[in-house]
Length: 130
Image 1 (tube, rainbow, N blue to C red):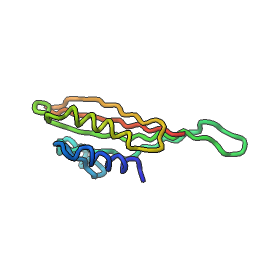
Image 2: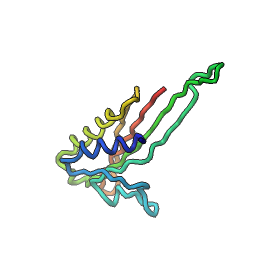
Image 3: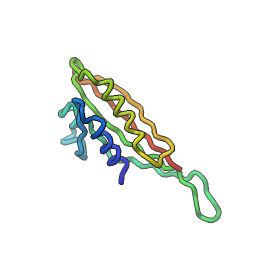
Image 4: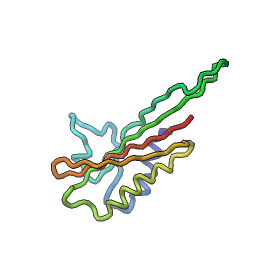
């Protein structure tokens, strides 16, 4: 199962009682326009972006790889009237990284940006395994 699928399943449960839902749509753009800007209060997750590189080379061809999987999430809300529980929502989204097992490194960075009265949250989930 892809990390995105596990993350989405956990987020469905974590955000069940809030004003925000999780979209299963891929791709999350149509005609060059981001769907999260059209469908506010809906979290969109990008596909797994996997970067695999050799960490150690061995003589017996059993090389050790570093696998870095990144999933980016986007959530847009009205900047003038954000949901009252937006802090809890963002905390639940960030904490959902812990649902991914078998990954020694499970990180999530959040950034915000305002475009035309729309507050955009960008979540960069990063999972690293050796």
